[in-house]
Image (cartoon, helix red, strand yellow):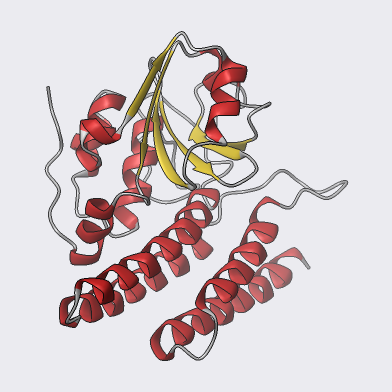
Length: 268
């Protein structure tokens, strides 16, 4: 019964994503509303944890669908962006791209939940092998359409990973900050998908209006890719250093993604 339900769920996900693609192409629906609806459905499927249900499992099939659809959106948006006649038109397209990335990237990350962690893990697909924290970040970004060497990126300190995509002046760095102050301060930060660099770790933070999620390949229990609330994020709480770069709020990052430009990894 479970394989049948999974096939039905995946079919529905594909149909939802196709509707989003139609909306983006023809503009006959309110784009953000349908994106939110699709995202909520995908998240409910991936992270649902009803009484008696098994923990979330890696979902390579949905991941493949999400990656393919995101590439179609990127191609369509880039064509429109390149042909846009005014700065205002280009900015509007960049805003669309931001909305798409802020819904698609977290869904892609959550397809990895349950994939086992290993310090030397270099898995390229959810559930197919083990994955280290840096490779989790670099692989999701590569599969989202960023033209970057995931091996070279993953082997860098977290500060270099962030600065590969975000200029240093656009990052924030806190040292020995009280954790409650950090959590409270995130509500004042713009919504978006962040890379978060810690003492010896790198992760994603998905920041929303009311709270945030800490999504990473954890070298602590349960030694797997997890999606944690601020209260559950022990690795984030224990770190003395917290460096943040908001990918999706950064115009240069959006333009680089749209154009599919080659990204040079920052190295000390």
